[in-house]
Image (cartoon, rainbow, N blue to C red):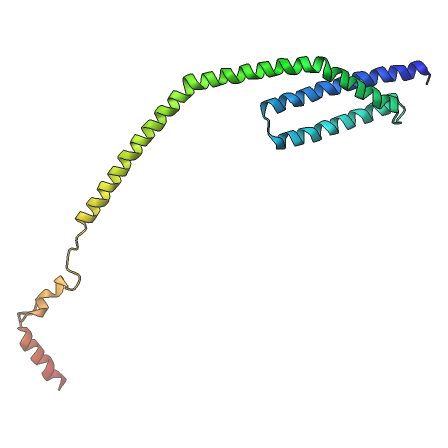
Length: 185
């Protein structure tokens, strides 16, 4: 491989670095939207894996499977040039678009969703108060109307056996007890 081949490999490595900068800006866009640290951690891991795989494929294709210092320097230089020139413009534009979209969605929420939410909360509170008062009324009614059919210490259905009177055969109870006493003797 001559000098021109190495120079071409260096330029391709610079283009690969710029491509990695574009991928990095995609991840930066997701960071601007979410901002969650756990998501950022996994994005960084994924970006590192993508860059490692891209470098490996580049070294196999353009450097005969060997890791060359000029290829790594070219990738880094391409990434930095993209990041500090076009990347800055892209991120500024994306920040403006995201802030506009957030303001738009907040305005839509404030005009349409928030009043409906407040009305639903108001009606829910009023409905809850009505149901609570109804439950309290039913609870009072249950206590007022809960009376026993018979007194707990008396048995009403055996009341006729306590008094001296006739049983179902027409015989007086006292006579009945006497007859039972005679038969046992």
